[in-house]
Structure formats: C-alpha cells, structure tokens
Picture (tube, protein in one colour):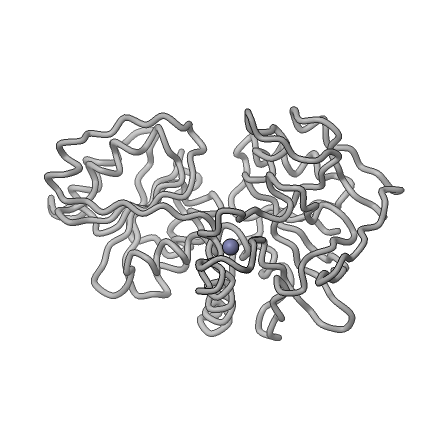
Length: 333
Ligand SMILES: [Zn+2]
C-alpha cells in the first residue's frame, strides 16, 4: 500500500513516501480501515522526533486522526488503546489505564499516514450522516481533548474560558465547543491578521500576544475578577500567565506543552486563589461518541486550513511546524 513511514526519528525529512509498504494485517479482534482522511496533529511531530528514553518499533507510521470505511460503513477511529481489563478500562476511563497508548503516536500501533490501518474493532466509531469525513478527521485528538477539558471543568452558561492560540487545533476546538456550551471565550493570537479568524470562530475577546499582556488584558476584560477556566496546551511559556489570569477558585486544564516542559509556578498565588488543576490525556471513547453527537447537533464546522495528498505528508508537517496554518491540516489518504 501507499504509506508515509519513518525509519528513524528526526526532522520532517525522515518521512518517506512509499508505494510498496506492506499492507497491515488484522490480528485477532482487529479490523482493517480503508483510510479516507487523516488529521495532522502536533503529536505526529513529537512522535516523528522521538521522546528521549522511549522506544517504539520502526518503521513507524504516524497519524492518530483516522477516518475511512470498514466495508460499507463510514467510521472514525478512537485513537486510544488500553488493556481492556483493569478497573479503569472496565469503568470506561481507559485513558487512565497504565497501558494506555495512542494509535499512530508513541506506540507500536501504526497510524493513518497510509491507505489502510489495522485497528482494534472496539475502537471503531460509526459516523452519522450529519458528520462529513473531513470534519471527523479533526475530532479524534484536538477536539476530543478540548471536549474532555471543558466537560471535566464544568464549562457552561455564565462561565468565561481563556484559551491560547486560536489558530491551533486545541485553540479552535476550545473556542467552538465553549461557545456551543453557552460560555464566553477569551483567546490569544499572534498578529493582527489572525484576529478576524478568532472572532469568526466565536471568541468574544481576542488578545494579540505580540503587543498585549495576556494576564493584564484578561483582568480588564473580566473587571479584575479573572476567568473561571484556563485551557493551557502551551506549557512552560504560559503557566504563570494562566495562574495569574484565573479568578479565585478558578480551574486550570492542562493538555500539552508545545513551548516546553519545565514551567515556573507562582506557588503562593496558586494556593491562595485555591486553584484546581486538571491534566487531560486525550479523552475516553465514550466522550468521543458524545462529542460526535454534539458536533452534529450543534452543526459545528471546524476550519480546515489545507488538505495535502498523502505523498506530501512531509510538507503538511512542515507547514504545522512553521505555524503558518489557521485551522486543521488534513491528509487525503
Ligand atoms: Zn486498562
């Protein structure tokens, strides 16, 4: 089959387009998905670069946002795999399983930069007619983790949410889902040209981080009170701002660290405001099904920045690394 594996970790140039990559074999309990689209995520870049001390089988095919068909059925793939037996798995909290891994991520499960993938049958989610395939290819990672964080932290009417990076996958997902849940959104962009993008998505207030101080602006917007919830996928660069922007008793939801792992925490402010912090790794399959239904019911349309052909996967990742996109990048497989 056609696929874009990598044989060693490194820059985007290690991605190799192959027309004769071995077809996947469906083991016990697995099915073969004929892939139509695969969303591109930061996770793909981290996986391709490799994580120090973590080994995966090579060659590896990345891509966690898989949409396609199994026989006649239109499906998407829940990207989390787990043991299926522990107390968390049995309770439907599989992302807490000690063996939790992500298909196409830092695991031995090949992902969606290919014409086909073998995935556990239990990971298949049927798509309703209301969800187009391109939309579905945006949901399994960034929309799912945003949904998980918003639900876990009680986003709803009367609440204000701050999220960084309106043009990123998690940023866009958070803005659209927060609005649909009835809460208000403050977001950040870099540069004036991305301002309109953020407004169109539904952000009430847009802060240009290149010229404005995020914590100060947030205080002004909220009459000095601070926001109820911060969605932080940026990490080291934003943790002090997040804690400073929260109101008394506010909640900080963390799902990533694109700017780095080692954050400085203003500890006194953290405990005196009595902040609750929650971590989120993807979400559960039950949350994905809930999200798919919510997207269809609310008619939410994610912005697709660009669709690349499978053979151009390298260019797709380079575009994401250059941060020149606004919205999701997809591969047509
Ligand atoms: Zn388990």
